[in-house]
Image 1 (cartoon, rainbow, N blue to C red):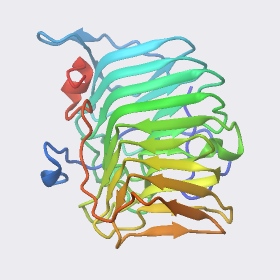
Image 2: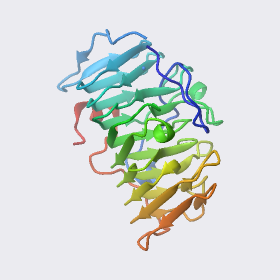
Image 3: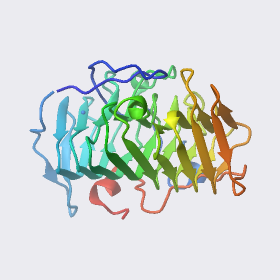
Image 4: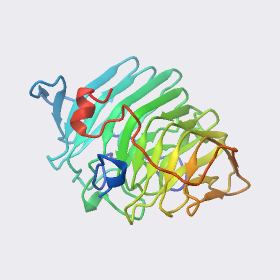
Length: 314
């Protein structure tokens, strides 16, 4: 079944909608050069060359992952000009070693992944979503594509590890909806997000955190917040580099008239972008927080779709 669409700047209960994929372009080899998924699977995948992964062509299908299942070593071909949706719900599922290659050109939908864990602990690791989409999916109004949409009913825990997301028009990881609903937590660790709109990492529930990760902006028109913390919090940020180049807000706390708290340690953020404290929120900056960020792609995070699918970054 089609997964939920998401609102951009409010946490209203989402309506049923269509998902698709990626936005704009540009993957980075070095940070100095950065920039510049309602049927079940049913597509015949083939191993490619010497690699040990399955090639899946996007044909407007939905891939459904349930409790205890692992979906891994997939190379998703978006050059077909069609869509693909991945939904993962239940408990203790894993998405691992998945890369998307080519621009998404479907011009419809709202998210590539729709996910939740109902009470266990699930994992997303070694995923590449960096090739972007064409202009139909790249609305700078912030109402385009989201990479990961965490359902409001999420009540367990999800770990994001070594995920590379670039050029999405509506949040890279949109995980704030459970804040006033299911109450599930997320931990974003060793991840990289660049040139997204609205926000890059968006969280809300107490116990959720971003660690050992980077946000980078160097492209006009997709200048989303670095980290956006919604209520109720508290959200933790540790050992991160938020290189915003003056765009939007590096760490933004509170929204929709509701306050939250963010605790920041061992992190550098762009002073020009700064921090935002809305509706009585607080951003607590530790003594080891600086204002000279240098974004990086964490060790083990894939730099191409093929590398992700083969698991070569690990």
